[in-house]
Image 1 (cartoon, rainbow, N blue to C red):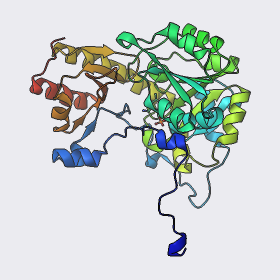
Image 2: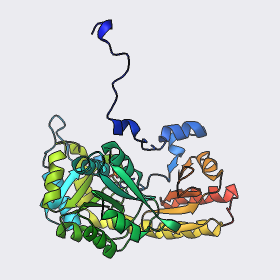
Image 3: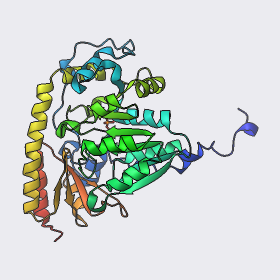
Image 4: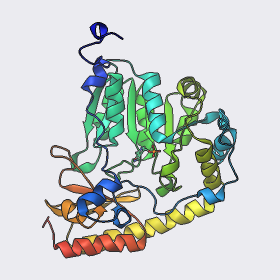
Length: 363
Ligand code: PMP
């Protein structure tokens, strides 16, 4: 290109992309460690809602032929997911994490100006993906961190797509299936039920997704299956939504290694159940130990707790390499932190740090 034809300004992205408030990425472990002056292995992530134990390791795998593409139908993975979800393989769409599936749903169903409904607070990617698509987002409040169900039903009636996280990240609230069913019946639009934390509470809208043409359940292997690093998620839906997702799904977004790790973990459901049982016991113990220190604790249905967070506490924890999820000023969760339940020794380090900080917000 000659100097005369070189554009003076960078090309603009689509207007909705330019206007999107980006997802608030967590700091990397290396960044947290550098700021605290600690080695990276001294950092403990209480902010990512992952599992302290891996559901599979590379040593578990037979050699993968890495010169070839993975099976584009992901037949073994799909069959293993279908067994776990108790549906037929034709109801499953696989993706690189639940996040990719959520993105596929936005791509497939949202056009600029489409009305979309989300709870506030909920998983922030719902809002980000809707904004990128140019949809018009209505936020339904959750006074006292409990969803205003009447308003959600009302708003869903006018929506092209309704995002629901059950149990909800970050409040931990678990809505009954009757409500999810009422939501599906109240709208002609798509109802996305994000069940990333399903294994910790067992309740599921999968039967609803199979029975109703407008419901899709989204799940992940990043939580109870301990494979966040492998990036495997899936959707469960009826034939129409599944066909639509298949149209927009890229052919090879899950690596062959990740698919094999996922199959290994899925074929060992007892190990997953043992992890879940252990984490539920650890959640109860951590909630009690924190409450004793005088901080308010809300124990929800996921692998995390919401804990009152007086000013200065999160930085004091970060200085010890303990990262919690905090929320910005103006968020309904300002003054709270979300804490992932981790292994016993890691939780003990957190409780010790809370005790040493001597804080109680006196609520
Ligand atoms: N949905 C919810 C509610 C989540 O909390 C998360 C992870 N934080 C995701 C989806 C993304 O999961 P994945 O790792 O499978 O992309």
